[in-house]
Amino acid sequence: MAGGSIDDPDMTLSALFKQWPVTMEVFMRHGMLCAGCYITPFHTVIDACEEYQLNEDAFRAELRAAVASKGPGWKMN
Image (cartoon, rainbow, N blue to C red; front, top):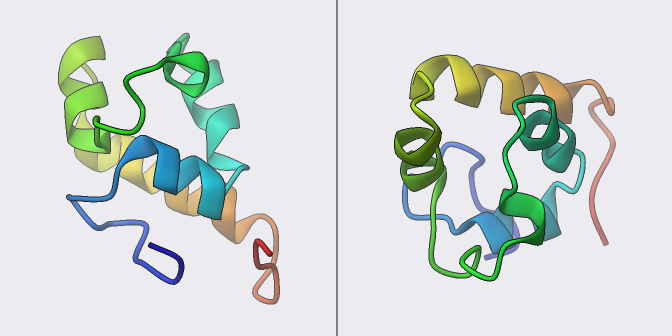
């Protein structure tokens, strides 16, 4: 899923963490255990927000901000 959009509703959490590892910090800030969970190959941001009762739009904005904080040229190898 390399090159996908951070807003892709079908992107699994494992793909998200692989492409943008900085997003794990957002999950940890919210006390979410997703980064170490065996369900990440199957769950999406939608699933995680539902599980933790978070506003998905606000959470996605935090994910985008975390990725943007790395600068425009930052990419995961």
